[in-house]
Image (cartoon, rainbow, N blue to C red; front, side, top):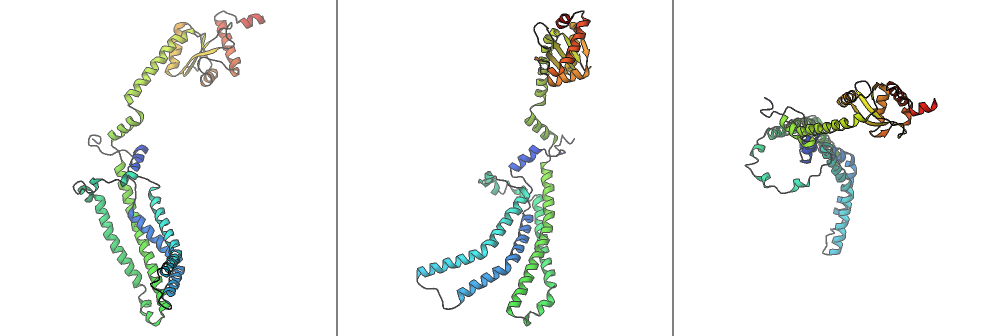
Length: 361
């Protein structure tokens, strides 16, 4: 029933996730980025606050102190404008630069580096109210609307709670100097903003969790989608099975013409089979002319029995020949002694004598 109605019952495959990422479908909470950036900006301002205030105060005093400097002299006006711009840049660039870096970090921390130039192309469907009606009234947008209203209430509540805690101190400000009042108000504003940012950050984590759940739900796949992806990635399973069957038939055909030429077959005893051919007059060492495991090993043994070829069970030798010797290659020197023993045994069964043994006698 799940497959009939297209229920998404399977987890997304790595290919599905990569394809969705390339299409821009990633988990990204704008609320989380905004809250994290707010907290980072407040902390940066708190760190540079004193030096920034001193720079701004000194620059203001410099510009307002003394005689009026605005004249009709364009050169003097240009010089003073350059000086003012340079002083403002020295004071603001470190703060703005760190805020910009913080913005990049909080965004890339969610999705990593993702460059999608096709998303910048104009698409009339994005501004078509008919095609976007379902998206506008979707569950995700409803949740975002609820989060927006909750954020407004949260900001008001945190600000009221923070200022209510300072009510006694606020009542005594009239007895303090202007500098003390400014420092106190800056401190209250700083900590209020930091509390608001922390509250928004905590709320944004819930928003990110919802978006992650929604993203995972959208990526889930139906059984049909999973089959189509497997077919695309690995090819049609029926064609793959047919290719394997054809390859098996070709191997079986080669065995039918090769195994009867062997002089003996070494087995393991049922898992592996290696067919050896040896002509003492022409070969320096026996040659592996066929080998196989499982079904192929059974085929080699059956052909050997039908052709009257001796079958010798030597587990270690069969395993070594199968793993280390390719077809139509001679037996390596490491297996000379073991193979020579088997060949001698086979010759004795046939009532023959090896040329080397006859010479030695």
